[in-house]
Length: 121
Image (cartoon, rainbow, N blue to C red; front, side):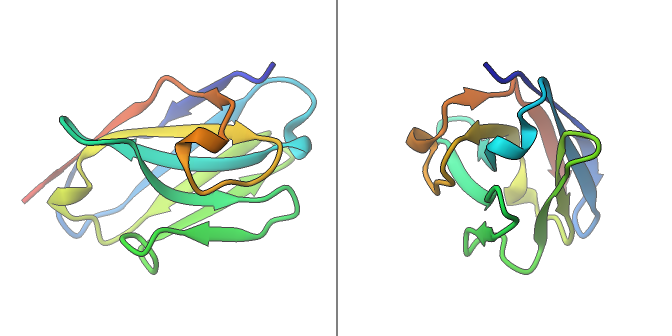
């Protein structure tokens, strides 16, 4: 069992940056691939970025070049650095964990509770 807790969301102006963190429980952080997703009202959960157990990264076209995913094994934490934010980035952001890296929500077994990101124009 893996528990995930996101933090770092908030209100930011367009063009600004936010850094989301996903703290994980347990001693098996290195055994899991991690992903970031978001869900806006009335929309399906959208894949943003993933990082495999050995550090390979994957991005959705919508965030490539603006968002960066990383993992800090010393702190058992996944990070999503978000730059050049746009109003359409407004959503609840979730981190998730899985044994084998995946690019869809169905591929993840464990989820955090989400953190709200609001980008004003």
